[in-house]
Image (cartoon, rainbow over the protein chains, first blue to last red):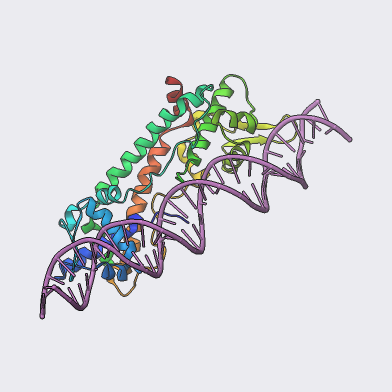
Length: 142
Length: 142
DNA sequence: ATGGATGTAACAGAAGCTGTTGCAACAAGG
DNA sequence: CCTTGTTGCAACAGCTTCTGTTACATCCAT
């Protein structure tokens, strides 16, 4: 499955960084983050690179370098993560243009864009309601 | 892009069948449906096959065969179409199991499942609020 | 029987994602 | 200045999914 796990990877990384920060370790290397997620450090650097471009994390290069949160975990929402990782939208329109001779073929794309837009909007609202701090709290319950 | 257009294909087919029905043509062949969507009839047979298994359309085989709506367009919601085409959920969990030695690795999956479940729920509610008749009306406005 | 339609398998091509290797760029600390 | 540890990034392989196509068996109204 090509199931998009980028949202999961990024959120996991942020939650783990938030916990480390709370324990006094402000800076983590991509290798340390990768160890928790159980994947390759390059995957993490790609993911954290997205988050850096979105202003959610900061990076220090050179020896003794690593990653840290750019904001408090309470103030990073999953919507920002969603936008940062640039996940594919749940629905796509036609690959090839429909038949414009047909009244349905002519009007279906704006009609569907409207529906898909409403779906995207409620999704985003829900994501905006959850912060990394929320995820971390829920994670540590178990 | 592997953007899932299956939802779009199925909804387009149903809207077109609803318009044809209103015009007095109850039965359409996969070729006639394909002509509006501008794709291959086999794609349509696959899509309509999904909808048939979900009870949204009916098929007659043999000569002079074809497809017709199993219910009024007002009573087919996009949520039913969504379930029928079995689209992939917007987010997936980790491909490989996270590190269970880490407190975040241990608890992150149920925590994320909760969030993703809430997102899915609001998406479904929105899709349930739109019928094929709504889509057709919106389509013919233009 | 025949002809027109569906059902479905098999395959090709394109695209995306994860994972891996390799190496340049960079900066802290001696 | 040099060493060392780390990020940035390109390139590639393997896997999966999706669309599109061909081919053919199956079905059934006439």
